[in-house]
Amino acid sequence: MIHFVGAGSGAEDLITLRGARHLEEADVVIYAGSLVNPALLKRCRPGCEIYDSASMTLEEVLAVMDGAEAAGKTTVRLHTGDPSIYGAIREQMDALDRKGYAYDVTPGVSSFCGAAAALRAEYTLPNVSQTVIITRAEGRTPVPEREQLRSLAAHGSTMVLFLSSSLLEKAQADLLAGGYTADTPAAIVYKATWPDEQVFRCTVGTLARTAKERHITKTALITVGGFLGSEYDRSLLYDPGFSHGCREAGK
Ligand code: SAH
Image (cartoon, rainbow, N blue to C red; front, side, top):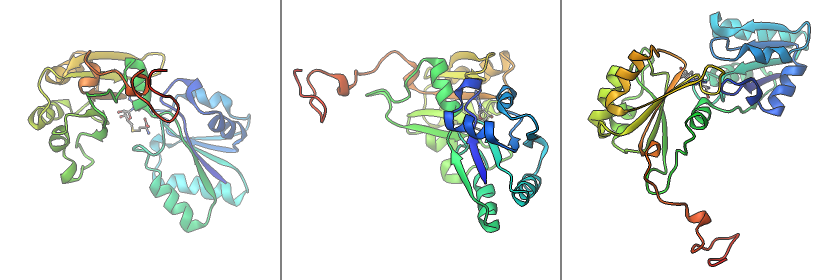
């Protein structure tokens, strides 16, 4: 049995109860060492075989899983944040399907949620934005033409950029060309929820400069949009004049 587990965004107590239980019971753990907090490995049993996938290929990861399955062992594949976001789990699951191995997925707290907590922000403010675009700047990994930053920026919605902190000169130009004004609020969140978390508030016009001045080139999220500003409407859900399934207006 193979359990894909989201480790959460950094803090060692942000893993789910289910994820922690799988880690505690595993015979073999393959963790994404570049971003998973190694403190989580304290949960592993003595004698658990631990592999850091940072220097491994997909084939090598699968070979470890093959060995564990042949020996009837339980494997945890520990991914950073939530495995469904830039986690490269689909190719692993497809390979396991072909081999006929059983697996399941335990979600985790994605870093974009950790970043909102660090910012004490709400991404979906009434009359500001009701949409969060999760994307990345194009680097060595291509982004489909119809999803270029410039066209996504035209929505003016809340945007969260993964994997982009070393590409900010171009990203900033694309965000501006797409329609965000230079004074649109932005923030760089470095190592959200880790002990050394840092938050740098800036604007779209100063994103690249801020990252350069603060020497941020990795493990950061770029957040953009009016949600970081001070103007918004209050929510109808808790508005005394608004009725809904659980409450009548005037109560
Ligand atoms: N599956 C992960 C994302 C993996 S892609 C998740 O759900 O969070 C790796 C990228 O995620 C990094 O380049 C960085 O942009 C972002 N990232 C991961 N952990 C982070 C953290 N704690 N703080 C800020 N950004 C983080």
